[in-house]
Image (cartoon, rainbow, N blue to C red):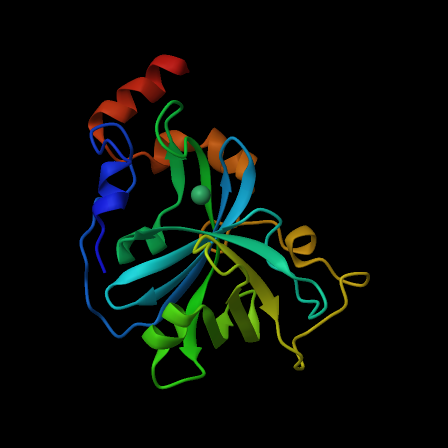
Length: 204
Ligand code: MN
């Protein structure tokens, strides 16, 4: 596991995102970040081997086991990223508002999650504030490592989409209880780097 791609894509003198490093912990962190970049999507992340494995889910998670949500595998992120909420400046990679939409822990269903991940079929239980119960990430194309599905398994937490759309019913941050718009408006508070604060003041 490496963060080379993550670091290469970003200029840390301009973005407030954490630089981070590979950090082996046993926290089994699970997060979803709602990200209003050029297109709104939900970044689904699971801690494994010192990094956050990451998938961009355009439509977000769905509690209906008959619904497969496309999940595009993206570069590994540092564990610290799991606590990030704020603004990535316009023009930078992923420029836009990032909301911490869900946080918790995950438990793989196998003793060897690294192997399950490599073979493209990872099943697990989520203990998040919003998402709970059994889920799977499944790679569905032979020679394509990027395209996966995120699917809810049948259990007591499953609900038909016609009755309940979780992205609709629970749109706000688990960290600040704010909407994307509110996070965007209060960005001076969430930007931590000196240079960025200056830019923020100039605007107001
Ligand atoms: Mn993203």
